[in-house]
Image 1 (cartoon, rainbow, N blue to C red):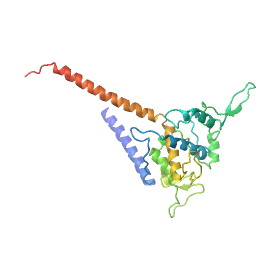
Image 2 (cartoon, rainbow, N blue to C red):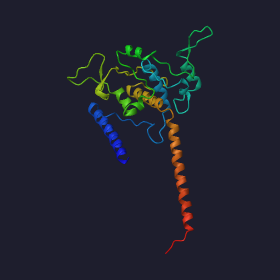
Image 3 (cartoon, rainbow, N blue to C red):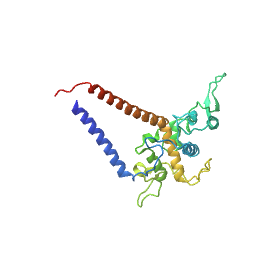
Image 4 (cartoon, rainbow, N blue to C red):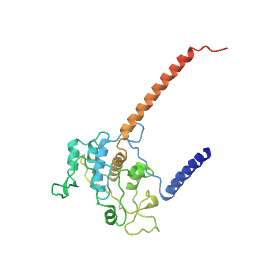
Length: 260
């Protein structure tokens, strides 16, 4: 049994190191950002989350879905924390299919807080055809699904360049120094001042990339802040419990006479 667990452990180690080596051979070292949510006491920047939603909505949502999020999540604690009225206004901008009605027919209505984010395409095949044969992945857990997490998403958004000399790309394929294999079928989605932030922040490429990455990190881990708080409370509880146990044991053993 012990040998079995050793084989499993070394197999996982080899797979992980192999994937790390493959990534290193095909991509440059990722850009590093001092994300506010990364530390043990990390929290999301509310303003960045709200700007990130704006970037997603105006730039990404035409191709990429967020199927695991509902509009009510935008107003929940720990997220962008739009007011309920703001979240309702956001939802009302989208149409969803509902029904059947009393006549047995489906109908369109404005989205409600309880509705999930509206999908950009009705099915996978439509999405593939609309994007030249490439399927735009759902962004709900994209940060968690990619090695490098938030740094990887940010780096890819900032990594579009002209291909190196001698490298030929097919039509509709672009060079990205941080993408696995350095080739990507999505054109650079960001450019200076492509949107106008509602809070007046300058919409530089770097700012938009950071904001939408922060938003996608929250989409993948909407309970991150509460998890951090719970972890802190557990650690404090264990420290107090350890101290109490120590002094209890010390008192118990003090009553036992030691033999000479």
